[in-house]
Each structure stands twice: as C-alpha cells, then as structure tokens.
Image 1 (cartoon, rainbow, N blue to C red):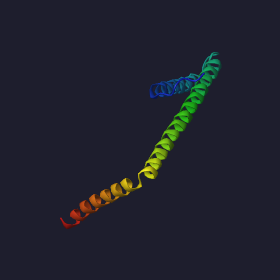
Image 2: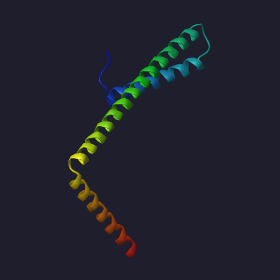
Image 3: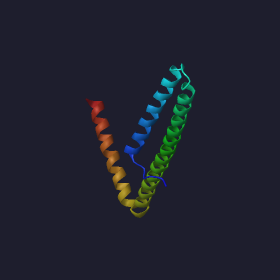
Image 4: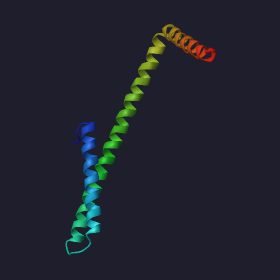
Length: 108
C-alpha cells in the first residue's frame, strides 16, 4: 500500500538516497578487506531501492500536479463558458490597465 504523497516523505527519500550513495562511494573507496564486496553489494542494493522509491514518488508527484493543473484549467474553462460577458469585461479591463501602464512608461 502506498503512503499519501507529501513533500516531507519525498525529502526523506531523497535524503536516504543521498546517504546510500555516500555509503556506496565509501564502500568503493574502502576496497581493502574481505567484507568490501559484501558491503559494496549491500550499499548498491540500498541505493537502487532508494532510487526506485524516489522515481516512484516523483512520478506520483508529476501525476498529481498534472491532475491538479488539468482540474484548474477545466474550472477556468467552465467559468468562461458560464460567464462569457464577465470574462470579456475582465479581459478588457486588464488590457486597459496594462496599456495604460505601458503607455505611461514610454512617456516618462
């Protein structure tokens, strides 16, 4: 079962990934000794697991943000369809304001 998506959980997984990467580098650097192969294998395994978990979280985050953006666009389009004259008046007002500000900047 997956846990709910959260920034804190993502940061924890990225931190664990970095820690496991550091352990892998240290195991590669400590090539002396009989345990070096086992340590390197264990460090590599932890790094791969952390990377897989981080990839999964980033994919979930991307999907979540994409869905939220799509919902916002749909809500905006719905508002425009339901209130066309209000939308036209708002766009005209913003255009007038921007035009006035830009015109003033050129005269100064």
